[in-house]
Amino acid sequence: MGAKEVIEAGKAYLGIEFGSTRIKAVACDEAGEVLAIGGFGWENSLKDGIWTYSEEEIFAGLKACYSDLSKDIKDKYGIQVTSFAGIGISAMMHGYLAFDSSDKLLVPFRTWRNTITGEAAEILTKEFNYNIPQRWSISHLYQAMLNKEEHVKDIDFFTTLAGFVHWKLTGKKVLGVGDASGMFPIDMSTGNYDEKMIAKFDVLAKETALAKGLKDLLPEVLSAGENAGTLTAEGAALLDESGSLKAGIPLCPPEGDAGTGMVATNSVKVRTGNISAGTSVFAMVVFEKDLSKVYPEIDLVTTPDGALVGMVHCNNCTSEINNWVKVFKEFQELMGAPVDMNELFTKLYSVSLDGDADCGGVLLYNYLSGEPVTGFEKGALVLARTAEDNFSLANLMRSNLYSAMATLKVGLDLMLKEEGVKVDEMYGHGGYFKTKGVGTKIAAAAINAPVSVMETASEGGAWGIALLAAYMDNKNGKSLSEYLSDVIFKNAKCEKCMPDAKDVEGFDAYIEKYKAGLAIEKAAVDVL
Image 1 (cartoon, rainbow, N blue to C red):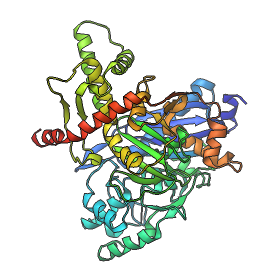
Image 2 (cartoon, rainbow, N blue to C red; image 1 turned 45 degrees about the vertical axis):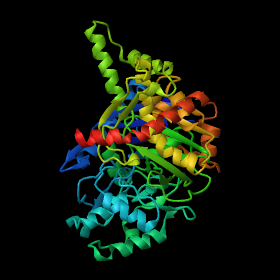
Image 3 (spheres, rainbow, N blue to C red; image 1 turned 90 degrees about the horizontal axis):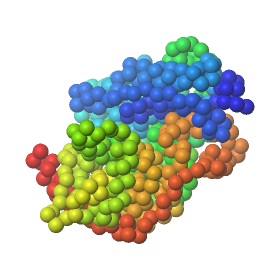
């Protein structure tokens, strides 16, 4: 069947992902071939000290994104889409959406970006002997309890953004295990929430206003390939304002952006991982075994099919690189030269490869915001060097690209060097890897392992959740990793970069100076 026939027959798969700045939709066929895309830009708001998106914005954005996808289908194939073989919803992980027994949202959505749960995260990490980061849903809940917030007594259910949208489309309060693992720790032996930790939490909650036990507040956990409900008539109306979309379409378990990124890069099997590098950066590695101790810098989550994953998440990545590129754009305009931003980015990224392996001593901190991995609640932007250092355009840009990976490397070094975690290959995706041969080379130096970027990497998490919807329908006895390798990525083309020994040595030298220089960053934060 051709693309038009697949869509017309309702045999395409739809994935929608709520990112921090864009909601994206992808329709694909059962082989993963992208047939149409749609999107809608949005931004979080800071209200009363809380980073949030309103309930109205969430569903207006959902409608606008789906409408854009429908338009793309109509423009390409001349048809109005009425059905799909499966749908998947994905979104930013973690955060806090709490509801009462009448399904009313009790307080504005608290996103992963908020760093207001330090006390709760510290207590829970100690109590569970398990790293509970500030952005996790359980940290938000417990902090609200510690703060004696009025809404706590009325909480009947809480979930993530993906879980919330899925619930409104299907009526099902469920969550994929990968997203659930960012709400509360998962017991690897059962694939469900850790019962011992739930019991410990309920003891902590005894003197608070929480009316129900934790287990009754959490969404049900499902694994990749399971059916997570069907689109209701109300859900169809919520998604498609034209009224063309039919109810009854099956949905796969809703997932977080970390899990869909792993699917979209074929990195759900043991000893593989991925680096998602854009405005923020995170890396995930699928473990053969658990870590020997708790590391505050490393989150333990799971793949969408429940394998243990170590995750390092950093708040800052490419934003400061973009700011430097804007400065060079202004210079070009000052000189009366025409500006092609794609060419400018490509040339500035590429010139970094002419720099010294250790950036000639040029040190840069890209902390637009705080970085928990290195212990910063707030950030400042710093360029530091001595008179003897080799300050050049190449080294400036190389230091920019190193700094975007530096905090990530600090966390990954704990996995790879301290714990001896083995990595056969990492897969990159995001804007950092857009210039061919640059991001892959520097990332390979950072982790001392091969880094690949697939041609399909730009499709991102919306494609990843569409693939999970397709897997639910076409697994045929295969595990998720087998399905991805044998069906979706069987003939995938990719750019693979092996680590260069000189670059590895240079990045290691840079990172030692970087860690020693964190005192400079602290002084800048304190003074500025």
